[in-house]
Image (tube, rainbow, N blue to C red; front, side):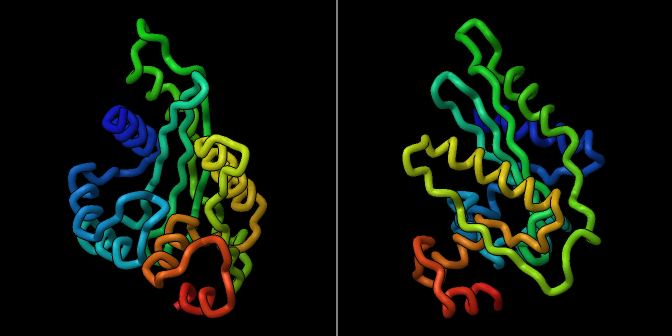
Length: 193
């Protein structure tokens, strides 16, 4: 499923006029920077991704199978500073055993075809908004991810200032030995550096 998802997102990026970096290179960078999940990104990883591939944005996707549903939550962030430029989610019925999973995943990713970075003019100078990864209390983890992607997409569409990627925020807090349960002033100051 992971490879089918990667191929589908690569094709979606191509249709949006982007030149995707080879998945094997990104995976090697993830391994060398010990990035195990997209909710554990670090500014060092983003800098290495930018330096070694020339990528100015990274498209992060989560593919979920839950309650006979197949869902994709995706977000794009700048490699220079971890600020989100786009987020969205889509879901469909999970394929039955006689249906092609790869085809279903490709159709699901095609629902995200309209991805375009939010206009820079929408951001208010000097404003940043920190959005913590959603906790799935009473929900499936997939539902928390999908809700987060929809919330992020709405914040970007409404021009609510710069939104720091929740995965980068969580990764920075982990690197500081802090969790995401409480975000105090010292943690905010450390993340902003």
